[in-house]
Length: 48
View: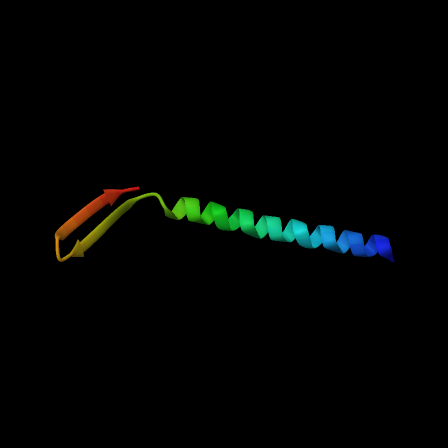
């Protein structure tokens, strides 16, 4: 029974690592491109 609990903990940790890795990947993909802002100071164009 103890071995099954250990396998469950390892599986949960693997899933958490996969989800966090995917989140980091999405954040990196989203940060590239052009950011255009229109405000009180005028138009601002930035590349990421």
